[in-house]
Image 1 (cartoon, rainbow, N blue to C red):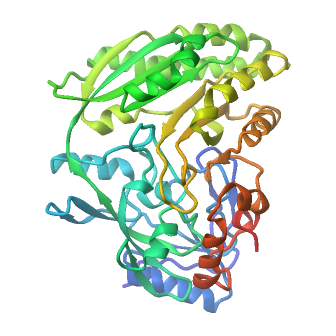
Image 2 (image 1 turned 135 degrees about the vertical axis):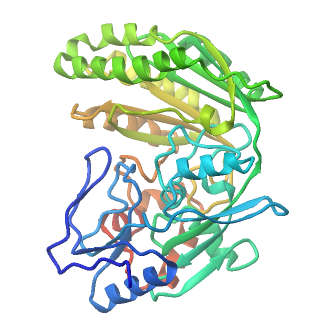
Length: 442
């Protein structure tokens, strides 16, 4: 019996993303349990005149997955298909959450090379929107892909790699769901290793002065600057010979749950209720976390729980512009009435060759700004976006921004390659929605 769920037009339940910034009311939804069922669902939707989008766990802040047609939920398409230890790859179903993949790989003595700072997303959703961590030599989830399987608008199933359909492979690793529906991904993996994390408070001016050195000397460097203060928290992750020395249960709970989530939630709620108190709260928050060092397997070091809900905008800049841009953000806040309780996050990535990767063709620094959910954010984001675009910034595909296809045609030298491929694979715009119309054109 097919596990595809079909409902009549107008009867499907609304879908909301994690941040509550997007509500979608699809005509119907499907939960295919196989590639064949998914391809059948696409063909039937086309026959019924419906557009098609697939959605993961909803961690994108944009409407990249929203549709009023058929919404595909891949939660039955999970798990590892195969591990190839000679090629050091793993092939995984597209709906598999990164958390499930990471724990399964660890049991096999394997690991991804790099990850972002959360692992709730599905592998396909994370890759398709350009999810990344921080790294001198490695960063994005998509850059670790060695092959993928794609269902196209006419229901065909394509396998893509550097040897097979290479032009599709180059683009579809970060394809925004515009080229088809990814049903499986083959990742490069390596034997599991240890990372030593060194977390340390540091003055803003010191981080700015030493940014290039901190980046060069560490495999993974990132920092958070607390607006209205001169304080940052830095994190340096580097490979270690061991032994493992994870945070203690009590100290880890205090840092990661009590302070980073519980106390921060209260601080954000207070700041939302009393905006004038935000600078004082920020000064306290920026001093709450103390220095610590710990050693563990990669996913336990790269990722951490994020329970405080927020909205986010992130821009990718040429790495050499990061310090100047962040100084401009700070100066803008100092002369404005804005009150910002969330820290600004800064990470890096090496250049890659993915057509619409935010790091495509250039070494990159990412500046991410956040606001607590329910707090007015548009004035802040608009002011920051003005600074980012002046430096040739490229917005994260899954985070709030106002850019359109005309901007991206200038920001991405190979933008025309992507849109031409889209014209070939989806000429009738089966996978179109309002967001893709804005960012890719029609």
